[in-house]
Image (tube, rainbow, N blue to C red; front, side):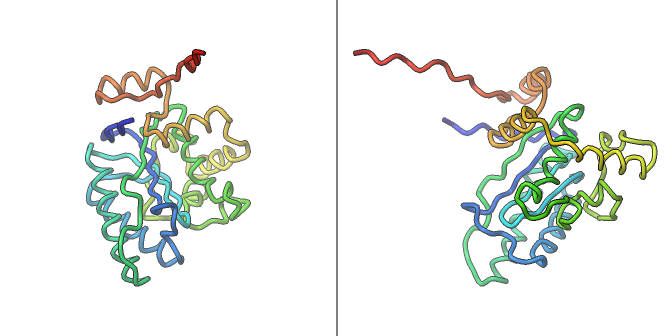
Length: 230
């Protein structure tokens, strides 16, 4: 089946994943993650991306961003990959590709799904068994969103800001979101959307995006298997 054309419209939040090629390691030390973060900040600033959430894992990265232009996300990820791969190959005396050729992305509806997606990203180290508390993992945005830790990468989204009138109120309410697990159906929708490159949102939201972008935003339903004739 032909791959769907990427659609990264400006002004709408997007969940982005960049994976190591064949799930290989793309960060071998904390220094590598720091260099990646620096290149990410430079590229996001240059091409116009607000970064709301992130997590850097050993062999992949999750980002929740809002681009200002349709080309902001592709240009940012291309620039980031080019500069970081050059650093990584030089440091570890290797050649060739480091990341999968095509990053994954999906558009995220703000009202119901934005904070769910943000929690999903920041809970990655917990699901991987690296830490029990997301606050114990330094290479994510959790400390910024939950405790106000200063980071030049972090730009809070209006959906996050609506949690309270003050920083302390927002942080308290944000931490309380992590007391419950993400609902199974929401988790399934989230994973399916990012894996298929489809919008994460309501049926109405997906239809609106289809009309705007001229691109399918839903999965084809599989029909019943044909009967085998004797």
